[in-house]
Image 1: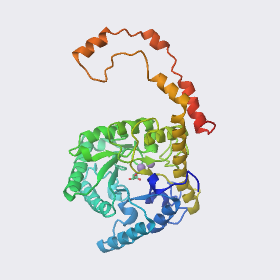
Image 2 (image 1 turned 180 degrees about the vertical axis):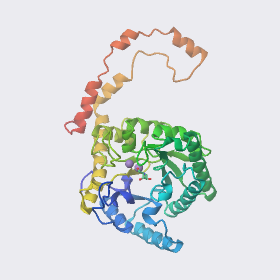
Image 3 (image 1 turned 120 degrees about the vertical axis):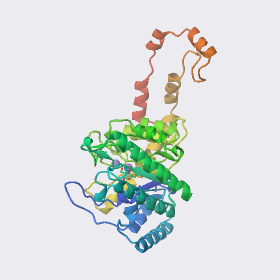
Length: 392
Ligand code: DIG
Ligand code: MN
Ligand code: MN
């Protein structure tokens, strides 16, 4: 045991599909045997995770009868109790069955759209039964290859209809559940609707019950879009919409790799942990820290648990590095230098005739401002040295 071993208070969670991933890929079959969900709960508890997440069909087969469902859920709940594990988040598989081949909520066929919404109602019942308070929607098949197949205007309208309907279902059933929308730019579809967290944040503002809908940004998905995960998460936090987060790692310009957290862009992972933990002074994120990732196909089951432990340890190491970085007096001095200047009437207090007149009357020397050195090189070097463990 050391300071970087996970404890329940860390709020770490994994989906059943992550540590249960059997290593299949488009060019090869399984390399690991499938473990029973109860074995996965036991293994995650052993690793130090606090929670386990699931799609409906990760636990209950698509064609299970009601009595089979009840038996499976009962056995799973016993394992959760025995292992002191919670289910922070649940979601619905709207992408595996062939009927979803052209989407679920945005499919042209109204029967598919109806089936998808009904399947989510059942998945919401399961989520509530397991104590989940966050329900993620990832529209994996909500997209196109042949864009002539439907208008994007109609697709977004159908997406809104489904989410509004399901918000109504949760409110009528009084489930303590909020929704978190997860963006991804492509894969498995050629182009996915609502491809980034930014698109999702606007879409949420158009919903009937927008107050109960937030986002679930994923490192790999924002990176696939060539965007900064830190900026997307920052925008979600600023507007109170970071309801959940999918942590992993990704090389830009690749398929969705869902790699072990911190195993690729270490700078980005450090800055993301710094933002989530609020070590620079912002209000911290207090929701589940979910690793939506899986082990390399080279690994046996022991390697899968190595993967899970690595995700959590790296997060905790980066948290300690971020705390040291923001406690570093030279860092504080440079940041202070960057945030001060000649006192002048700002605009933060909002427009007023007086403030506009005062703003016009002020002497602001653009050349002096342009000549200021901001010491970002030294600041970034300090960050690198904290990351490399040679400082702090
Ligand atoms: C993929 O990134 C998606 C699905 O695994 C799931 O629906 C969601 C839950 O975090 N992430
Ligand atoms: Mn992914
Ligand atoms: Mn995800």
